[in-house]
Amino acid sequence: MSIDLSKFQATGRETCFHGRHIDAQIYAGLDGRNWRLRDYESRGGYQALRKILGTDGGPGMTPDEVVAEVKASGLRGRGGAGFPTGLKWSFMPKNYNGPKYLVCNSDEGEPGTCKDRDILAYNPHIVIEGMAIAAYAMGVSTAWNYIHGEIFEIYQRFEEALEEARAAGYLGERILGSGFSFQLHAFHGFGAYICGEETALLESLEGKKGQPRFKPPFPASFGVYGRPTTINNTETFAAVPWIIRNGGAPYLAIGKPNNGGTKIFSVVGDVNRPGNFEIPLGTPFSKLLELAGGVKGGALKAVIPGGSSAPVLPANIMMDCTMDYDAIAKAGSMLGSGAVIVMNDTRCMVRSLLRLSYFYQHESCGQCTPCREGTGWLWRMVDRIEHGHGRMEDIELLGSVADNIMGRTICALGDAAAMPVRGMIKHFRDEFVHHVEHKSCLVAQPVVAS
Ligand SMILES: Cc1cc2nc3c(=O)[nH]c(=O)nc-3n(C[C@H](O)[C@H](O)[C@H](O)COP(=O)(O)O)c2cc1C
Ligand code: SF4
Image (cartoon, rainbow, N blue to C red; front, side):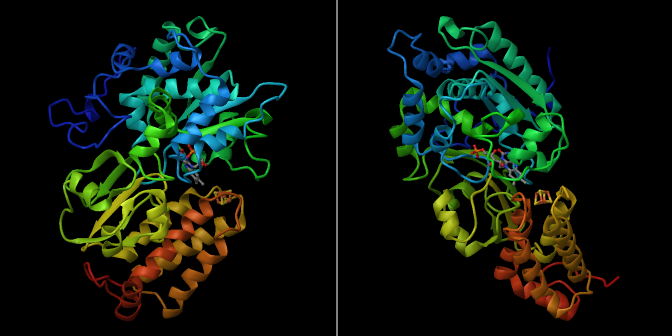
């Protein structure tokens, strides 16, 4: 099957793959067209799988050795929470009597984030190889890649890459003549943000409504069809072949302690060159901003450093930060999915919060009261303030509603809705006060009371 990706694929010298990356591992050598198996093999693809299976003439690696290497790399999950990947893999029960499953989370619905779809479009085999290695390490023989419903062409491309891998013997029975068998399937998801939450994803994969499950039990003991399951993000799996080929210690050394390797940041908003940038964790934010062509349309005002759920940080704090999990957490936000939303000084924070709050109340699955009701309250209160009907007590009430959602819900969507509110009021309270007192905006056009 041939797919026309030309409408969103650069073809010239100045593409989204040139001059945008530092020490790239996942995007290394890509030009937008070289995604096929033969291209991947020419970049060293599937050597890591051969290495662990011992089909490269070497001694092979035991599953425990693979897990140990991933632990040594300091790789942390790229889906949002930054949980150590090797540790997660070690939770998979070893002597379980029955099937165990592996799932790749390619739902990628966090506003601002667009890295996983580019990995799948331009380097799909790196995900297939990473998943095969993970399956070998955890004794899994069946897996799925759950791909966001609205990126159908990328789902089709991944299917095509799977066909290539099967035909070449990298997937299926007795891979490369070894004793390891592994079946990987693509799953076309349903396009809802909540389906990216790991247990909602499992429900959706089973053909049910995508609503999160109560935890515990966690997927490691009760996942797909009630069987032990490990779920990782697309970029997490894509990082694995490099680690196995080159070793965990060199991967760790590329980043900084506790923050191994490179990370792909989707830089969006008020920048001259938006897009995906793969850089070592620990790179200064100022360098990332420079790669993205600098701020467009005004001076830097604020940045949401990790997707729309992450609290906003003002420019002065951000310019002192390095881009890694620990530094961003210390500054009061989170690295999350790695979407960096840049805002210039013409952006009104009340209006920005209104847009975010609308998104979360719309995406709440409605199972638990604090999230179902609270996200709607937040949105309506911010709407009131934005449109000149706010009361001074609404500002305190916003914080109080956010506090009462946090930690009181089945899944973290509630927290994701509450955290931006707290961040905006903490750093940009004066804009909310101005809206209430003057019924107009401190930075943008006057608000007309309606
Ligand atoms: C509302 C919500 C949406 C999420 N969406 C995604 C997503 O689109 N992709 C993703 O990898 N993780 C997403 N997550 C995180 C997953 O639940 C899970 O932690 C992640 O897939 C684990 O992979 P990792 O350890 O490799 O990061 C979401 C979490 C929540 C609460
Ligand atoms: S927190 Fe929100 S999205 Fe998550 S389960 Fe509860 S209602 Fe659904």
